[in-house]
Image (cartoon, rainbow, N blue to C red):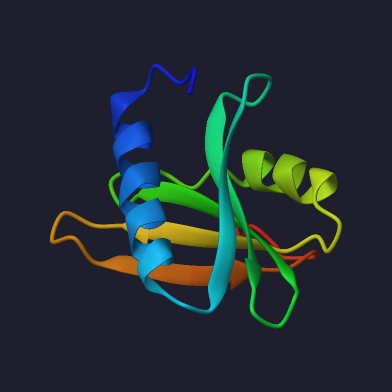
Length: 103
């Protein structure tokens, strides 16, 4: 895909495998953004709404600048974080436009 970060690739693969098991999602597209150096997934819910999913590992810090840049590329300004932990759980959190970083 162009990404050289093996942990990012592994997280994206785990999330992709999880999403293809969920029948609510159709046509899951994998994208590597060269400018942002990030892999994300785009899919459609059965309700026809477009979903952008950003896979991350729980051991990595959330990059809010990156999320804002992805939101600006996204029509509905919504990003779903797919946080992968070491026990193979994936937690999905939806972030909408206007979230605030409390730092």
